[in-house]
Length: 256
Image 1 (cartoon, rainbow, N blue to C red):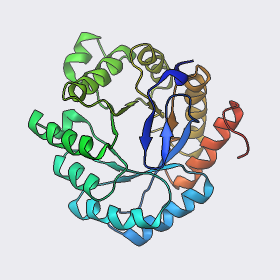
Image 2: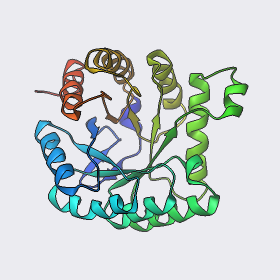
Image 3: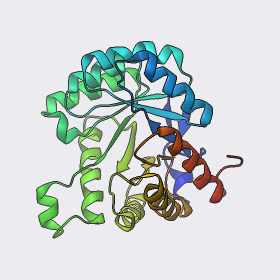
Image 4: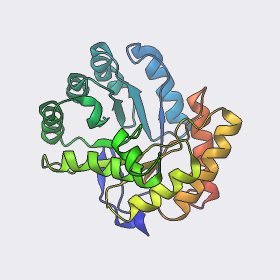
């Protein structure tokens, strides 16, 4: 089973990979700069069964807010960075347990190296993956395909591994359920890094639940996936309920 053979990665006070239980993740929809509202939402999600929480970090103020948020919550905190490498560094300095970046968006090799150096110093895992597929890969595979998504994700992993750091979690993003399932089957045969699994932009409560249940069901049943997120528009609390039910239905969790 793939899940039993992935590397173990420590995220805050939790471990994923290496046969550890599949953990449930969600993302806040508050402004991270608003510490009070963000903490309130995270504590509600914790109570519902959320085990890892991700916060958007679009500004330096948001990166600095992580320090205060961390003091008041009990689960690992992941900082979601899109473009500015300085925000990734500030997030780690303010207590992020893991960061999510796309090396392609961060800019020059020097900037990626600066982020990797701080992560190594603090032993903070980096989540990387494929977002929108690069033009050359779309041309190579004649469209967006599972093979292209895997190559894109592994290219980004390679950039960071070449910098001498392998404390990584991989995420493949696609809103196409069957393409997503195929991509996870492919990548599981090519790497032993743990995988964060989710169907991107799954949708509203009804359609999002169906897409996530089918997609996550196919992937998890094969022993692939170390953390999951059910992406729903609306209240994150619903994501936790659905994720618990999916894991329970697959025999990966009791209760819920």
